[in-house]
Figure (tube, rainbow, N blue to C red):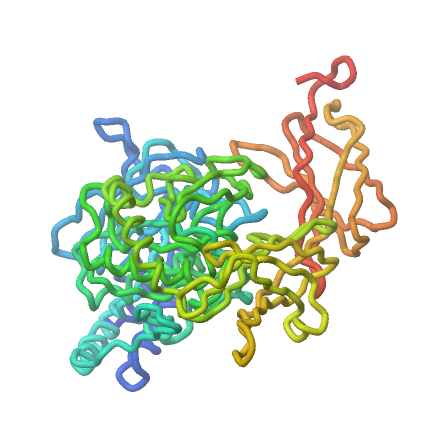
Length: 586
């Protein structure tokens, strides 16, 4: 039977979802068949629905699926559902046809692996790496609606023809060396073009930049039995799962490190820049995130892996003028799985574990226990990581609200030593530091400095330092500081009778156009948008009707412009109830 015939038969068995998948795999088959001539294989991702009626209870009361045949051979699998509890116990196992089952592996919920901002966390799990399987089973503690499995094949083995092409390609590539980059004293880093040669994980929009005030350590919850030549495919499968299944802009992590000491570039935007990832919800814009490839609940990271972490984190912190020692206070941006409400100041080690800020076990119990050693080694190495003569500049972790100040920080070194305490640093627009400085700061004994700058719109800033007569002036890299309008939304009454309308008052400083009012209702444990209405800025008032009893919330949203960043107002809580005095029924 040909691949096309097999996929057509599977299309009949899987219905509409399988039909779309079959067409995708046939297209992938053509591309992969030409892979010997065109270079590395293209990755393929696909899904499979699991009907609730096909799940049965086991002896421990868990819901277990029958053995499912995936639409193609897969390397990574995860789960998604449309309704049900946000917290669930989900496990997956897989096997190749005729082979043995893998152990049941817990598929962690997306607890904190998510962007900052207004996006709600999807209901589902992270992906689990199987490295080539055809059959899969899932079991979970609580029933859900709309359950589906999401798969990624990143090794060029999804179909028979693809496997043949991949074997020939691997034979040719066995002796090839892996290219790396190492900017400004960084350890060798394997770039995106190696693990994503066809640009399939290309970001949807340009990367945002924030600050690097600390580093978060993660693990990917995948098998520890992979070889060094498998890691690029693992990174690609994670990236496609994050981008295509989770709906994110790009892979969530800034960097990934394997057990062999290989370091991979993660989220696009440049390894030297403070790129905002989706790795620690509520703290992404103030941090960088490094994922350890594997599961570290019952074993720690290898010495080669730890050494790579030390070199990478020490370089990255020093690159942004951030001390490696001590602790830092950052403000939570909130989020579904965040342990801290939005606006809460949180004091953290400069090298922290993901579980320190989000509701997760990441990076695993044993790796978390290694963080003390990791911090000490990072601190000792960071002393010699920053370029010997340089000035750094780091901007605020998030967009500055209109009318507020931007906190800028950095460090000056002259031949690896700080200048005399009290030396002057100037900050100005990228092209006019000396001619029109916006602020000045004085260095501390260790060479660090800080300053506040008032801005009415986004700006590209640079810090400068004059070492002395005859010495060339030092200039930092350009840092873009975003300014967002200040949006407020209030209501005269927040508890109403069902069917009544709420009178809302809104304001934007400065005045901006194209404001939108969003109203959500809590249903089945999740917030659902029931209204998204454009507003006239000059009106300053709006009304919304609460048609059903229950909890609601509303906020203003603004999409942003070239001068001002996207902004949201805080959520305004509303409630509709049955008849009662003053509309306060429940």
